Length: 223
Image (cartoon, rainbow, N blue to C red):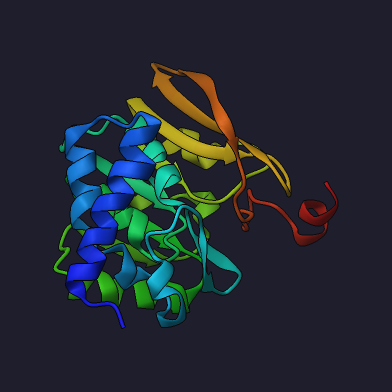
């Protein structure tokens, strides 16, 4: 059975070998990855694999993303510490915990109530106080709390949901995987006035975004 010292050692190795070695350099992000106990966010049966270089199942057909992808998507948001951030797809809560180290407030929304409740319990247990967890259709965003200076979507969409464009503040950034089953394109969008500029970052593989502006079961499967 691994103890806290073992997990700390694994976490430092994760940051060194998976994150820094792949070019992530933001010191505040590296500090966040070094501090947040990723093993607390995975089911007990996978805890000894928490710092491995890949995603892990967390139940409800969802996953906790590969550490490097968490780091990369966070870095693309270019957070300064003053932002109100929207995360679509709470999942385990780990991505939200990383964001909370780098932003003022994080609103995270999850369609599975059980996952949302579990993530909220873990976040409270580790002392994170600037995250609000919501249950609902993430493809609709959270208009009550908009605008957001940064939006991150942790599930693959058929395209960028229009409500997320509408809720992005001027100058804000939106990071989202777009595409169908198997492989998607990780995209980074920036709002400039009423225009939106985008760049393609790299191929990724995520679970599907469900909801009004997400994938329907039959289309995801056969696209």
